[in-house]
Length: 124
Image (cartoon, rainbow, N blue to C red; front, side):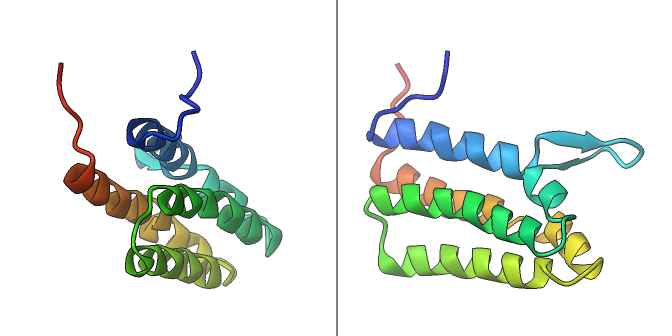
């Protein structure tokens, strides 16, 4: 069973949550028991890794746009991703920043607040 392909808010919610999990929390670092994701791992590859992370993170913003979120919200999300990409490109310190800042988690939080307000999940 895969992710829903619909354009309805609940399908979008499930997809952005899955992408955020993949990018930010898909692995546990042994010894420190801290989750990391694909964003932090590809960020270890100089320059190209940060570009790949930005492309993957922009999917979450694209889905937010499909929800009809405001330009202000989309701008905040783009800013989070831009900060993550720019500072993540700094060797070594950028990798630590990627590990701590988690722009995709911040962006999903913005989407969840929008969805909870405009498209609340109705329990059956």
